[in-house]
Amino acid sequence: LKSGIDILVGTPGRIKDHIQNSKLELSSVKHVVLDEVDHMLDMGFAEQVEEILGFAYKKGSDNNPQTLLFSATCPRWVYDVAKKYMKDEYEQIDLIGKKTQRTAMTVE
Figure 1 (cartoon, rainbow, N blue to C red):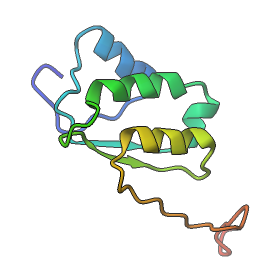
Figure 2: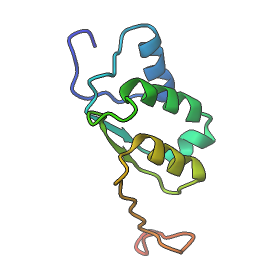
Figure 3: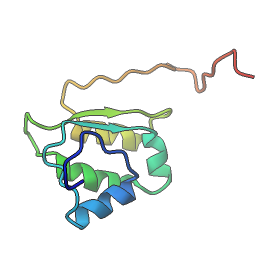
Figure 4: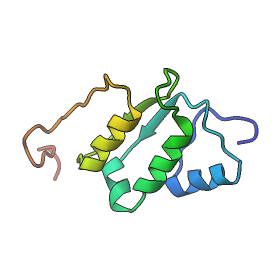
């Protein structure tokens, strides 16, 4: 981390730990990708994720990182995070539509 990095992958708790110990600084982050966002809420990471994002984002700044949120389901928290941290013209892509569940027919 001291030499600089291009990509960081980590759990919310571990990333927060590095920030608090001044080993990680997020003001120059260009992209944020959160996968399984819905599960982060279920596992109690919502507050940690929002705290981490707060280090990388400046309210009203055009230099905020591009943000991508991936989730199999979209509870209210996912939408709230999207509105708070993504640009006003963000796109939501729903691959399931009104169906409650969609799985590949070729999986056994």
